[in-house]
Amino acid sequence: MKIDFNAMPDKEGYFGEYGGQIIPPELKSIMDDIDRAYEEVRQTPAFKEELASLYADYVGRPSPVFHARRLSDQVGGAQIFLKREDLNHTGAHKINHCLGEALLAKHMGKTKVLAETGAGQHGVALATACSLVGIECEIHMGEIDIAKEHPNVTKMKILGCKLVPVSRGTRTLKDAVDSAFEEYLKDPQNFFYAIGSVVGPHPFPKMVRDFQSIVGREARAQFQEKQGKLPDVIMACVGGGSNAIGLFTEFLADEDVRIIGVEPAGKGLDTPDHAATLTKGSKGAIHGFKCYNLQDNEGNPLAVYSIASGLDYPGVGPQHCYLKDLERVEYVTADDQECLEAFINLSRTEGIIPALESAHAVAYACKLAKDMSADQSILVNLSGRGDKDADFVAEKLKL
Ligand SMILES: *Cc1c(COP(=O)(O)O)cnc(C)c1O
Image (cartoon, rainbow, N blue to C red; front, top):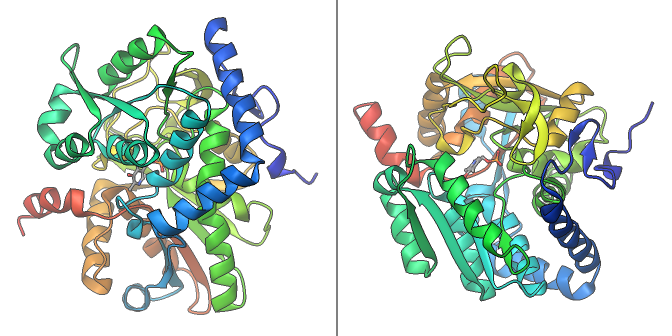
């Protein structure tokens, strides 16, 4: 049976059995409003042109596809190519969907955009988009994270968003989610909760995917133009799954292209310290939708871990769950050690310092390339740059 990947999700927001809206009825009607507004506005030339011109002149798109020749030579085997999302304004792929969400919120006449942030990456990208679009932005962040993530906290302050320190519970991401959500529930008609990946209730997994799919559309055309064919393998790291689905979407119907998502194995899959949701998780509900989850026996999310803070989420986007079950995408892992090695290797062979998140995909690409031939190719989504991780890695490796 041929599956029409473009027809996903269905009207209720399901990708197979995953996704949906596992939320109270009041919120369901608000989410349905967002879906209607999104479906209406996305078709209009005005919205399409505004987003396209911001991608070009503000984000700096298209981001290049770079042939990492020295890395490929060092590894020996397939040629490795990098889709350079690290070169975007604000240094990662997140700006692609934050701009889309901020524009939609403005279009719907919302008065305030709200979100939580862990390491601050989503907070900075969203605060940036809100400054540009001209809409109020409020970011909730745990006090522990505020103390740890100084540069991002400073940036958010400079960008003029309202930063709300969260002092309850563990004072980290989980509590920031609860705090931001409580604020949102005070006036969901007028507030817009901007979700930071392809997760949460419908329509967010669909919307965020659509905004990110520019990555794969560009990469497919760029690769084909320069190489005269498609890559044999494409690959991306998977936290919530937005940069991965952004690359994958345009290639799903290309049966000859092997697609691989790389999850963080942290300190090892046989320890509790990983965030390999698709590899080790079981089905359940989290944050308003159904997906594979890392959960305890009562169905509560486990405290997950990765050296890359952008990957440590106990759930994962519903479309990835479906693509796993269909066996259209393979989900594999790279651990902290492999990630650190890839981080240093890419820096020293190509002069590109990757985000620790992206280094997971680079690590697996290097491993796989060895078993492939020199006329084959792997295209890796380099989701972000590693400035944010440089001090941490230098200290960790005693450089
Ligand atoms: C946030 C982040 C990720 C993880 O998010 P996804 O939704 O899985 O893409 C990956 N890479 C970078 C650089 C990030 O900032």
